[in-house]
Each structure stands twice: as structure tokens, then as C-alpha cells.
Image (cartoon, rainbow over all chains, first blue to last red; front, side, top):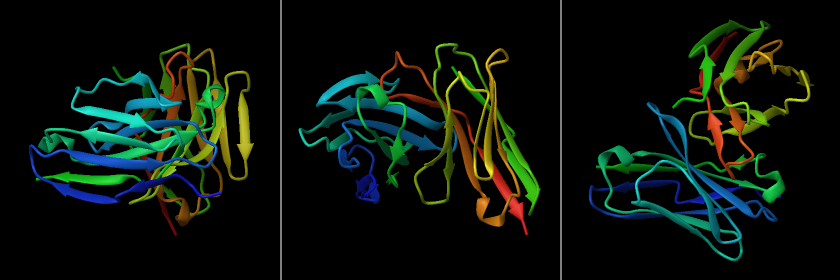
Length: 114
Length: 113
């Protein structure tokens, strides 16, 4: 089975712009979680989607949003980018709502905000 | 609020030695404790995981020891190899918080040949 894929792998944006990141989960996996990884804060949970519904959200401002499509693919969007948004954005997929604790991560999207 | 505390921040071990990384948690609702290994430029890879009804789990050279009463768990890497040099994260899952893993701050392991 193919693993979790994320596109693009690298992005450079300037302050004030917006960005959309994409995640394709492992085939058959219905839950997708997003995390932000920075050297200072480590891995922080952004949100989780299951069956096109956001079921959980971390402590991030409303500039961070996401969605999930009927094929379980997910996107996250960051509007009005700030320098502090520079990070590795990771998505993770898991099988179903009873197994959402076993998460498999993608390679991440490295976002740099100038 | 840091709910999972990981130590040490960095660890240097000689080839063939034992690497030990410790984590402590506060939330007694946590019911699943995975360890992830991350190489530079890669996403975290699931290494091994344990649930609180088991005190120890072993997979190859990797062992998790779990102490429910002390709310601590640890990763032991036996016969450490240079290829094990990576950052290791412990994590915990609260079943009432869908899809969220709470991570420790990470340990940078260096295994010298």
C-alpha cells in the first residue's frame, strides 16, 4: 500500500499571502489529522477530519482551516500568513474512528514565510 | 500545557549500547502510547506502541516499559546502531479527543560507531 502523501513538499510564501496544503491518506483510511512541527513548540495538533467532518480542533487561530473530501483526501489552508507560520506541516491518517490512535504520518510540507 | 514530558533532550550512545528515553504524563485518560522515529527531512514513523493494560512490549531491539501507577513509560533500544541516530518522540492519545496525539518534546539520539 502506498503511504500518506503530501503536496507540495516545499513552499515559500510572503507575509499576508495564503497557502493550501494537500494530504492523501493511506487507501482505506478515513481519518486525517494535521500537525504543525516547529523547533520551539514541537508537534502541535491542528485538527482532525473524519467523513468530511471536523471532529476536533487544536489551539490555533481561525486563520488555520481545513476540509476533507469524500475520497478522504484533505486540505488545510492558512490565510494571512505570518512569519511564525514557518514550519513543517504534517498530516497523519488512520483507519477509522475506532482506531484513530494509530496514526501514520506523511513526509510533510515545509512552509517558509518570508 | 505540556501533558507529556520527555527526557533527555539529547542522548549520545556508543554502538552496541542501550539507549533509554523516558516520558511522563499527567492525563490519566490517555489510553495509547506510541513512539515515533523521525529522520531529518522525513515525517515521523511509528516505531512501537503500548496500551496501559500491558507493562512491557518488545519488538526486535525496541522495548517499551510502562508504569501506570507512576504515569511513566520509556523506550529502550538495545544494541544501538549508528542507523538508529534520529529524533524520537513519545506520544499519548486521549480517546475523548478525536485524532489528537499529544507529543513529548523529542530526544535527539546520536549513536557513535
